[in-house]
Each structure stands twice: as C-alpha cells, then as structure tokens.
Length: 317
Image (cartoon, rainbow, N blue to C red):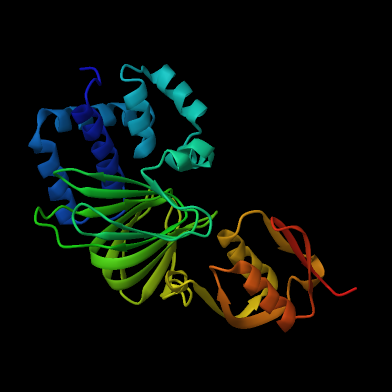
C-alpha cells in the first residue's frame, strides 16, 4: 500500500502521535482505549500503525514524529536504508524538529505567525482562542478526530472552547505534546526546554521519551524530550506580555535585555562588566526604546547606539 492520499498521511501522523503517548513510562487506561478505538476506526489507521511498528522494529524503538517522517518519505525502506535515513535525519525526532524550524521558510510557511514585537489573537474554527506572542509561528490542524496546534517558534496562549464533537485538543511542541483538559494555558519555547504555565483547569504533558505528567491550574512546568524537569508555581511574568509590559523584581541586567530583545529587531546586549547589575520595575514591551531609556536612568549605564538595530549598554566612561 503506497502513501498516495491525504487520509493515509493523516493516519501516519496520528500513528506517530499514539506511538509517543504509548511510549511513556506510565500509560493511562483511557489513553490505551482511545488508541485501540482509533486503530479500529478504519483500514488506513490499522495500516499506519502496522507500518510504524515495522519501522520501529527495524530501528529498535524509534518513536513519534521521526518514524512518521521516514515512513511518509520512504514507504518501502529496508533495515539498512532505514538506518541510513535515520543517521541522515539526525537520530531523534527532537533534532529533526529543531533542524526544520531553524530554516527561515519554516516560520514564513507556517499557517499563522507574528512579527517581532507583534501580538496576534486568532479565533479557531471551534471557538478556541489562540494568542501569538512576538515572533511566533504555529500550524493548525483540525479534523473529525482531534484538534491540534503545532508550536513552531515562540510562545502562545491557548484558551480552549468546549467541542461538540468531544475532540481532544493538543499542542505539539519540539519536546513533546501538551493535552488541554478544558483549560487556559501558556506554552513557550526556550533553547533547552519548553515551559507551560496553566492558568485554568489542567494539562497533561507527554515528553517525547518521558512519562506523562499532569500540571494543574496555578502551576508551571518545564520539560524537554526526556522528562518533566520541574513543576513550580506560576511564572510571575508568564502573562505580562498579554498586557504589553514586563514586571520584574531583582533581575540581572543581562537577563532583562535578553527578554526585551525578543520584542525588537536587531542586536541588543550589554558589556560583561554591567551584566550582573540588578534591577526591578515595569517595562513596556511595545516601546523597547522607552524601556531602554528607563534602564539607563535606573542603573549606572549608558546607551551606545550605532543604529536603531544595534544597541549596547556599557558602564559610564
């Protein structure tokens, strides 16, 4: 059976999703039942699962999006060819995701995106609301079985609406899946991990190769492809960007500039000799020039600007 229609491709994509869910250390009975129900829905689903199992046996347990990509691109791979393809694609689904999202066209070809410094509110087909923070990109896929948003870059606020078809709502990230449980939450991508802040109800986290973990309202969690790293109270700045401001207490100057740089194009940094200066305050995200002027008045630093796109904070001469 060759991969020659959209239904087969969608079945493969969902097979990769269920592979990630069932590959966790602890699998809920309801998830296993949902997977079995999905397998029985149509011949394409059963075929997709069989193809995924065959490839996993050849590659000794590779799961999730990487296996899906390899089946889709090379439906008749033998073991040697599959292993070669695995090496060429980088060895893990996380790396495959990371390489693809670093290419400029990934952001520009996304279903929806925001520019640097922009916030965008989207109302999805089911009535759910999605707010994109600065320089963010998402793909959106709804069908009869599920609702899925893929976070390709940046940060989003998700506010799910009740669904008449009772379809689950998923956010796919570089490091794993986030399942909404009738909720409102923020997902942000960092270089080394993902962060989720749950504002209402709860979410389930499924790291690509780790155990499932529920995060409840008032909690935040950081996770990577391997596991949930930590669960704490809400990040105090998690929703500041929705109001166009950043409220901080005793931050290092270098950390503040790194956060402000997300909202302005170009180069923004400081001299190492002032990087550890501490600062508190409320800074506008929609006018970073004003924020930088406020910093220069609060700390013993001066602004050095070659152009609007090159700014450095240095100690006074």
